[in-house]
Length: 146
Image (cartoon, rainbow, N blue to C red; front, side, top):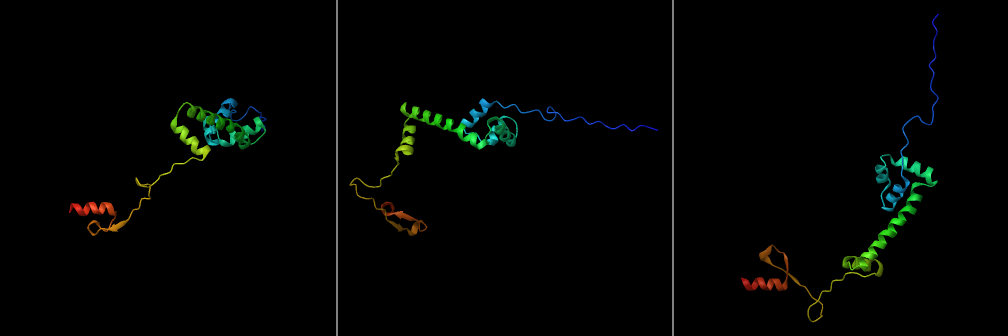
């Protein structure tokens, strides 16, 4: 009689399966400060967004969004600081932009003439130009040239 040998299955060990993704947590926090999205961070570490979420939970004992809000706030304050420095160094564009954002300043276009009276535009239909409206002043110029 032949013996039937049973296959022995190896007991799973923690070292089996895919190797664990090494995440540099300083680099991770830097990416958060740069306002990178979850997918961009996952791409940087060459893994899935689910892996990042799972590993953040293990590392920080909080969700990705909870940690991201804290870490990204540092990036926003750094950007704001650099914008202020730029404006103080004389960057006129940054001074204008910050004035609009923080001081409620805005660009206004004043229409008027040299008398500071409101500028009035009137239009008339010109039969010669396919019934396109023209300001009266321009139509008068055309009339003088014909």
